Length: 325
Image (cartoon, rainbow, N blue to C red):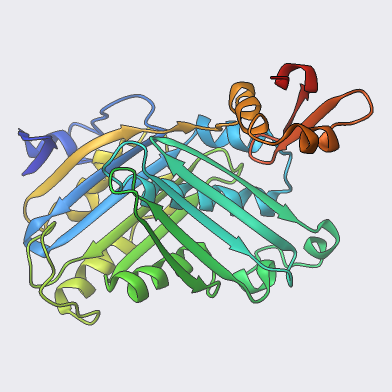
């Protein structure tokens, strides 16, 4: 049985709706399933999870920059991770920010964030150093010795939670798994998939809350719990081509992985989009807060202040005359 939860309403679908390949063929929830996040619960195994697939949103972010393939793949991974973690936030206006920074490797700065269904990100890197990297570089090859900061800004309580972990492992998902193990004490599996053309990216996070009901306070955590090891192996069987196939609904992926584990609860989906908050109105309002003398120092010879947005790779030109008074 698979149950879809929309607020307090549970709708139960027949098993065959999401079974995948059977005598009737693949049953698709939609022709194209992209730019979407979907949560799920496996109550009998005390496991919660979330799937994300980015398509046009990923293309829109990458199109602004003209990054080389290695950097496009890195940013695609970061955007999927930002969506996986950001959609865990419940309150409107809350924000998740991931930032990796170092001065040793080819990549000096990576930023990706999520807010109200919108993701954005950018990368600063050294082309000459990047050319010396292997075709599939590790985090150490890209960053050298560095750290990843994960920050949750809660809109309702105005509280900020931040965890900082070393950039170690084969990819960003290893660093994020380390964050959950270190800061949250939650055994987690994160798996990512990027299409060969880097135009579709997907990922899944799977987490165990042993010896306690999913969504409630954990009684204790054991990373070697046999129940979690079984679910981790099942989750790790998810393939990159499944995560990046727009014709394969996220619901079907959940069914393929966990239909033998008892009841499945799909906890509703949310759409994802490219988001950059650098409107001209916002930039004017920020510049207007500076004293007139400082604004004059920022301006060029023709009396314009230029503000560049790294997220959308655009320059905004604001005449001083528009800020007068």
